[in-house]
Image 1 (cartoon, helix red, strand yellow):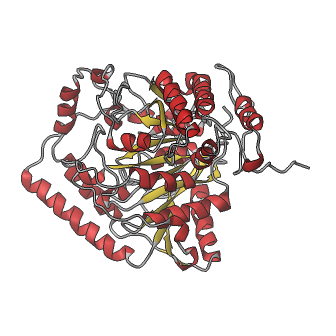
Image 2 (cartoon, rainbow, N blue to C red; image 1 turned 90 degrees about the vertical axis):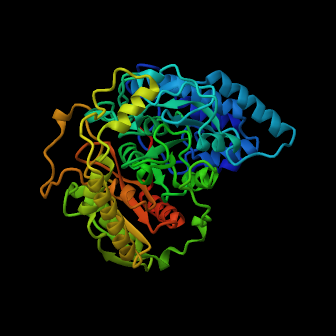
Image 3 (tube, one colour; image 1 turned 60 degrees about the vertical axis):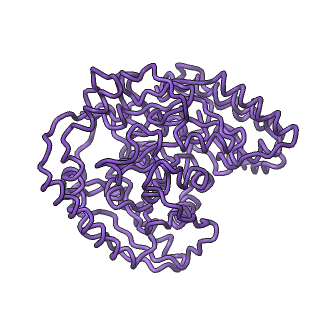
Length: 510
């Protein structure tokens, strides 16, 4: 018979800190003294949600200094095996934690993230902390100001510990995923022979391993949602136009403008709901950002939702277990009384083709200019520098095709509030792709992603852990939830329901 967990309000500081210390592995250890699975109400400060951790700090059951020290120790223990963390700012973090505790002691108003440790994807500028974007020319670059989302998280009380690894310019990891010539290859905390996804792979690996409460990443074609699937986390790509991209290495403007999204990645869906209002809204720099109010996920009546689902897009078949997870999630919403229909957006392949034609029209000129601006003379092998510039007429046709298909898809989604679909065709990829098993039976069309299609139309999309792979034992599996434009709260509410039914995040055996 197991002992029921003690409610957080009754936990002593000794109990809270004791759980964290037990979870810290020595460098080089093959297994840490943490369970392979943790209950949703886990009371270890290293693994509880950022929302709960912030509440404990505000209630002075934990100090920010204690919490930051625990996370630094955890990072020092696990990063030698993961290589997920680049530049660090531990001394500054401890100073900020002491200031946070002093402010709380004198009764100063606390932000919603007061004292909560975070890491930030290395593609964002961070004031006073080396920001490489994974490119050699910036390996010593120290920005003078924070990217907008970093500044907003810090203003809300979060404490930066360091920068999470990313491929060069978030695009140059090649077949190894999160890899670059500055810091090297990042590994998956559930099995270090596997990739953590890309390009926010360092972010996902750190958060899954308990080294930070959350991270903020970018999503150009699934770069938040793919790592969330690979590392068993929750991540959200908000509606295009919701979160500013100012201070990101590939920011706003140009041919890539409408594909790039910024969002949070965390262990629990409640943290995405906490973080989104903090980082969203115009910054008067990124011209695409609109002052559209955010809805409240807690106010969503789930039983009234109109849900479409598809387990395969008919172009790239997921594994049977991936498809089964989507069917199970659809059944959970049917049980609530939702209208649930098997359906999928029209012209998904055509939309992807239009994006590639449009974004590829400048050839490699944008990347070459970025290399030059960064002072990089040796690019990562995975950074694509081929292709020729297309005629203006070809670019125009591709832009018109994008808009026409986006319009057709908007008319389609008016029938539904949500889409449930795969987060990919399988669990995380092995680092050695020769270990990759044959694909499941079904069609194969190159370049058609379950994730990138929702960058192409700009709809809000999130991934939440829903199961564990039997084909790749121990690796997490997630499913994707997509919503109507500007209805991010529906996506978060649905993700939270799936998390409640499936259990969500589970600790890695690291």
